[in-house]
Image (cartoon, rainbow, N blue to C red; front, side, top):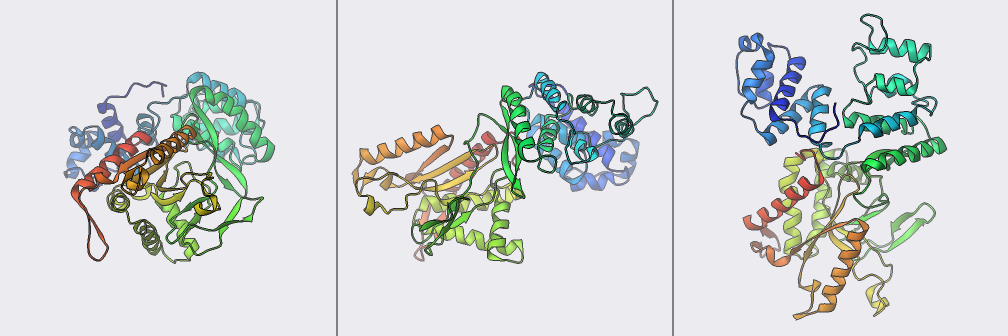
Length: 471
C-alpha cells in the first residue's frame, strides 16, 4: 500500500465495501445481510447474478460520512481485514505517515535482534502483520507454495531467511500503517522480550520512528513489565498517569502515601473522592474501563449496575458544585454521546485534582503554592491527549460583585502553564447556559440552547482529536 497523503476517491471505498461483502457473505444470504446493515432490500436472484453489483447499486448515493459509517459496520460484523486496513489508511493514518525509508531502517534494526519475536513462536508474532499465511508466496520458485510453507522451510528449518527478508516477504514494506505498528508493538511486547532487551530495542526503534513523528510509549503493564504502544511523539502530555483523583463530594480529600516508594496513595477522610490507578490504554480512559474498575471496586455482579451506580456517584459530585453550567455539561455529555459512541465513549471525569496541596488555603495564608487545584472536568484521550474543561462562574474573575484583575491573572497564568505542559484547556462562561433552570426540588433542567452548545463543542473536539470516525 503506497505511502501517500492523497485521499482515495469515494468510489474506491465503495468498491472495497462491495469486495468485503462479496468475500464474507454467500449470495443467498446477501439480501438479509444488506438489510441488517441498513441497505435496501432485494431478492436472492439479483444477488446470485453478481454479489458485488448487488452491493454497489445500494451504496451508489452514499457520501463520505455515511459510507465510512457503513464500512465500520461491515468491519464490526465480519472478518474483513482488507477493508479494515483500507479504512485505517483512509482515517486513522491518513495524515501522519511512516515513510518507506523509515520502514526499511526499522527492518534493518530488527535484523540484528536475534530471534525476531523472542520467546514467542514466529507464527504467533507474524500473524499481526500477515494474518493470511495460506496465500501464495513469491519467495521460492516452487509453484503454488504458500507463505506458511516458505516461512517453515526457509526461516524455521533452513534458516536462510533473515529477519529483514522474513518481514519483507510478509509485507512489512507494503502493509497498512496499522499493521506495521502492530508489528512493532508485538516485537517489544513483554511476551516476546523483557528487561534490558526490551528497553534497548524500544530506544533503538524510537530513534528511527521519531523522524516521522512517532514513538513507542508505555501504555500499560503485564505482570509489572511495561507494555508499549505507538503514539504521536509531539502530541499530548509527557509521562503516563499514575493517580487520578476525582469526584470529591463533601470536602478536600486527605491524602497520604500508603507506599511512598511505589507512589501508592490513599484517602484518610470520607471525602467520597475516588482514586483510579490503573494503567491507561492507547485509547486513553474510556467509560468502559472506568466502569470495569468501579465494578471491581464496589464488587458489583454485573456491568449495568456498575454503570448506573458510577454515574450516580459522579453526578452527585457535579451536583455538589452547585453550578448549572457544570451540571449541563455533564448531563448532556452522557445523555447524548453514550448512545452515539457506545464502548468508544471517553470518560468525562468531574472534579479532578490536577494539582494537590496537602495544606488548606487558610494554613497557607498569603503564601499559596497552588492558585488552583481542582478542575471541573478532564478527558484523557488517545495519543496522551489531556483535555481540561472549565465552567467559569463569577468567582473566577471577581471577589463577590467586584471585578478582580488579580484572580483573572492567576487563572490566565495557570492556563498558560498547563498548555505548555501539553494540556488543552477549554472554558465555558456560566452566562452561556441561558436556559438551564433550577427547580424547587434542586434539580436542573437543561434547555435546547445549552444542549446544542455542549453537543457542538464535543463533536468538534472529537473530530479534532481522532482521525477515525468516533462513532
